[in-house]
Image (cartoon, rainbow, N blue to C red; front, side, top):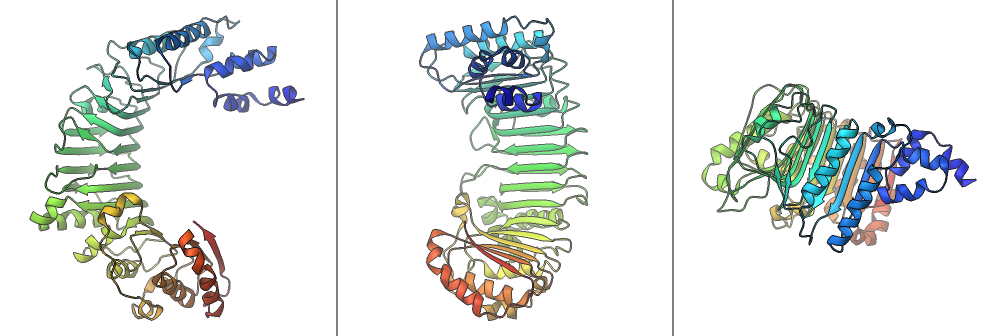
Length: 479
């Protein structure tokens, strides 16, 4: 009965199930019946996943197995060409052989025998992966992902053989080629580029593309530690951009610079210390933004005018968005400089905070700049932002305080989600919103384990409170 149900599934679903298995397990499934054999040997992918080898002998047996699989008689001579994806995910630590060349040669064999469209190489602990001599060059290749580990060197050919790439992802590796930006720019069909934890030889990454739509640059570095790094992006079709700078230490701060031309940008996530920012255009297509930037520590001390310029330009960039997630320290930087823009199009706001009573003045300034807000979420600050938290301010901001601010957004507010620890300031804000937000349809209060003790108190307060909205749903949920 089970055999009938599984083997009679549509091939696309059957393939999807097997995609979670490595090659050895797929071979085992193929022995269950003739039908399974036919399905397994017509898979459009090859997964070779081994998290760790005990020794070189075990690795040799794995390679023998891989060779055996690739040499199998697939029946029809054209069946092997059905394989479109190859994934190799192995741990290369503590092995004294040149695993990179062995793996690449096997993948190359697959490329020569079929029109591979996607290659994923996850070789944790490898020293060097040499892709020169066009070893993976293929007109059919559309997606390439390589992850080596922070000490792994990726050696690329000077002349780019991957000009047909649509998607390129590089993770935790060092790129051993100069002018990497030019190399990327030569990929004329590239739509997605993700560079995560990549170390470059140059101090400048200059990308010019007429096809790029999705770009992530996260924790990039230059070969020399704490060297300056400049990013220049000119991409007419770019829709999604994520920039995350490494943390900067006071007294030893590299210059992190971003120059941007992306007139059709729709989503922009920007995090970390910034020394310089410039752009052209008005970002009229920008709808969503996450922003958590700070001026570099040395900039704050010596170049206050430069800090003002950074946040003024950041404000100009995000002022037209309809939804935003922003950290309270970023709000405070803008507010203290009088640079908070008027968010006339903003409908959804997520405020990441250190504590409701921290930076309260700047929070009020932000809320006053959102006259048409429909959805408000307030959550605690992530652990990686604790470095920026100041000492708590011993002041209680009660419901009367919030009423005195004449917050215009409260009249259009329809949805609220607030994560609390049970502090009095948080309860007071809830009381204010319930009392004044006549259009409010849903409120979700998420409490921590520390806030459970005050859970009953919050419910009691809500039950006694006059609620302005007649159609509101209130939920109390654990985080």
